[in-house]
Amino acid sequence: MVTQQAIGRWFDRTYSEKGLTYLRPPEFYSVFMEYLAIKPGARLLDIGCGPGLLLNQATARGAFAVGIDVSGSGLSMVAAAAPDAHCSLCNAEALCWPNAFFDCITCIGVFEHILQPERALDEMRRVTRPDGRICIMVPNSLTLRWQFESKVLRIHDEDSNERASTFATWRALFLRNGFGIDSVYWDEWPGYVRRLRTSGGRCGTFAAYGSRKRHLLPLQLSNQFVFILRSEPGRPHVKM
Image: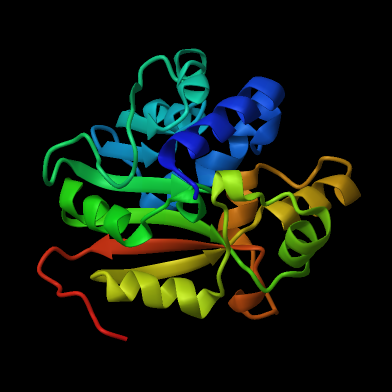
């Protein structure tokens, strides 16, 4: 049985062995600031902040940025990446912050590792201000990449509790737990990397690329989905 401690140890080991190479480059995280329209003074919580690359982007925009993680190794690197951010060892199912404290929450590449996702969503609603916004990026189980990595390479091991779902399943989970869905974006990073290689590094910044990209294929084929949710405290959970 996977435990919170086991997941923390898995991330400790991963950060100790791979450092920042485990994550996408820092510029990748800037696009989430645009999706949430982060402004100076906004209170932002990053769940699963790791070394603080997203926190760096938030503080650069004048936000009061807070990060939590279950990995002490990841948190030990936050001071270097985001010295103006605040962080603590805490898990998503029991957030160590008061009610209605944050304007927005980010959870990027983390939600799929959480042991009790519905409880974590309840906690996100609790600490977000009325009409606050939450950005969650989650993997698509239908992509060939996920199928190959999980069934052939077997890199999505049980110790990290990593799992993927379809677009419809993720959407139903968020709606069932009392969120409104403002928008859903493609994961633009794989396309940006391909364009960067073929253009010799001349395709512009990732934030500009991601915000203007148009797709001919349906969203359901994205490598990952970026959901922008709206916290609606008075909205009841929906049976689906």
